[in-house]
Length: 165
Image (cartoon, helix red, strand yellow):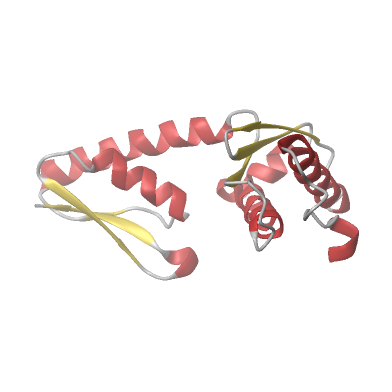
């Protein structure tokens, strides 16, 4: 299956257009093999390829806090950034601005949770999150007086606890 999904992205991939097209083709093939009816497009800015996935099966990608979208992003980064020597800094998969909306949602969650911790003077644990989501929470609360944040747990069960300081 790996050979069917991946065209070797090594020496013949000289410019960002080739890299972007290869990533789009890879994502399109994986999503097609999953039987999803979606369109895939991408753009490269600096060293980041941002892939947008949209279409009727978009909700499948975003179910369970975007588990499938996150998994495909992880897989694409492993395939195209591991040992290739390419100038791809990162690959980000999105679906019609889902990432931007999720970040705003997490910042709001962080603010509301910190207010609760300050009012009750008791720690509050949030639901498990991906490393990117935990980072958003930590950064959103980094300058907030009277609280501190800490990640705990392992793997998919790693979450943030907000403590009064």
